[in-house]
Length: 162
Image (cartoon, rainbow, N blue to C red; front, side):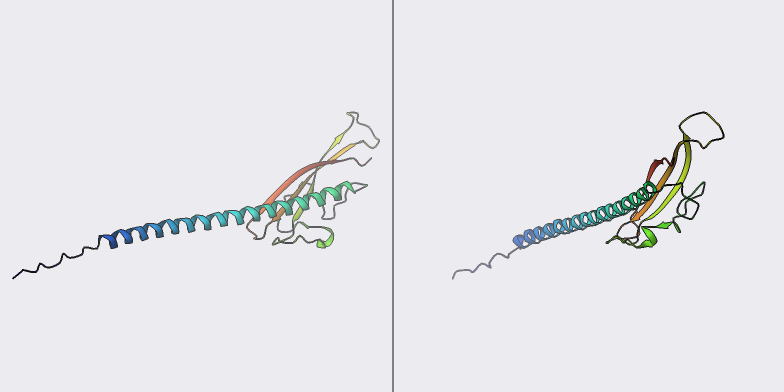
């Protein structure tokens, strides 16, 4: 009689290799998801900062146009500052009485105009009214879609009132 040999037991090498491959693919997939999520956050933050910049720029242009339109020096009526600290909690709102709105931002830009100095045309001092230019610093603060994205812009303008 012939003796029957037991069949050789399977060891599962293919199963182990397949499991290792699946684990590697899962790790690569999770890494790609994290990278994509981070890139999406970075893109959103850049868009938010850009909107804050554009809002501040619109506020700055509005105050520059306001200053250009004046025919006499501004009187102290809350629309400009002289030797004061700027408090962004209560500055001038955008546009006349806050009528103009900018879409897509969390708050309208805030502006402040500060009178810096008077630059005379001549060095002669006398009793007549001196001719020259008034120098103003214009500051604007804009926010993006979230109130955490803030941009502050500043410009200097000269205006002749004679």
